[in-house]
Length: 302
Image 1 (tube, rainbow, N blue to C red):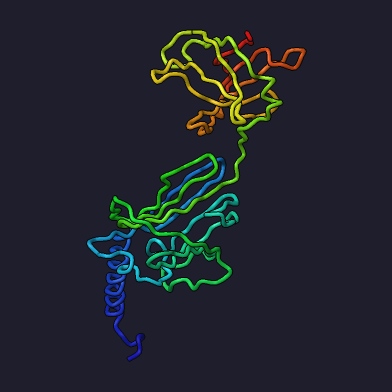
Image 2 (image 1 turned 90 degrees about the vertical axis):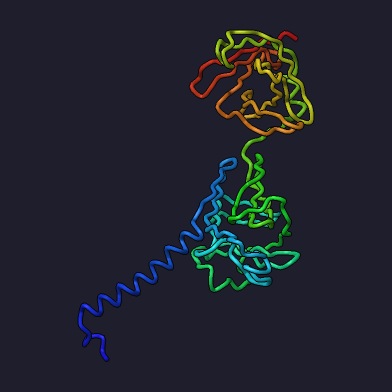
């Protein structure tokens, strides 16, 4: 029978029925694996992971069961997981040019192979066929004490030069070390440091650090492990703030917090500018915020 010979109301009813079936399946799938996005900016590099989040729902085991050994699987569901970098990065030492990629993992019992494909708009089936056009590297799956019911991408560690990207589902997780190009330099040469080493009388403006009024103290600027450092009295209960001077330009620095002997955070809205004496040694400095408001000043006393 030709479709054209059917009554219009029957045709409409048939399409409505098919639409109901596919809409119900699609809606259920969306509820089962909602789409999520992880975005992190590190020193100007934007990293984005766009993925669906399937849940375990009493299925066990996940790997070697729900996801069969040997399968090239996208870590998610529905549309393939997509990862995007605004600048060139490395992942576990492998160069990854800026751009958008679909992410796949060939899962095995002891070692997984990650593949990044420039075909970033694929569906999760058919599974990706691995080839030399992709960026590929190996990761080792590990067992976590915490069971993650719903597949999750997270960054448990963020550094000035990158982050650890983790995929965690059930008790299994894999970590990938992302390194981004750094724009901030923290070290200075000994020759440069000699210009600034010494003691300064510091005068802090009223209200700069909590409810305190104006106050003064002596700041000892020193050179250790290639960093120009000092302990700033912020009137905090936990004691002085250990910081380094991160170079911005000639005689201008940002303060950078120190932890474990390494810079961990740059206060890029504060500018510390030194004035030099006739003999080329620092005589004084001022610290101002981005609006040019004076926060504190220092005068060399030794």
